Length: 58
Image (tube, rainbow, N blue to C red; front, side, top):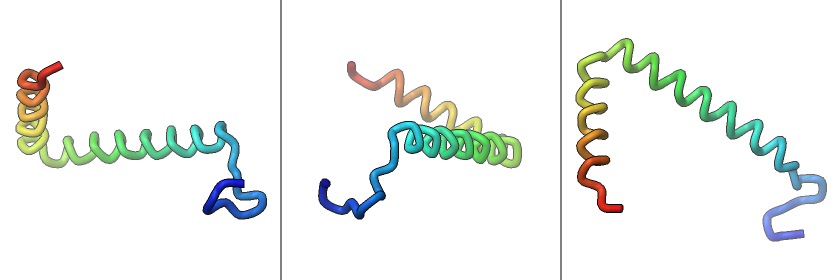
């Protein structure tokens, strides 16, 4: 067993993926809610993100 793992604490990959999917869903839901509540801030964040993506060097 690796460090930091107690007996029976090694969760399956499926369980970890399920938890991660739920977390990402909750995160997206929270972002949508925030965007509805603060449309101006959401717009500036979108524009800022687009600018960042345009100036990013691959």
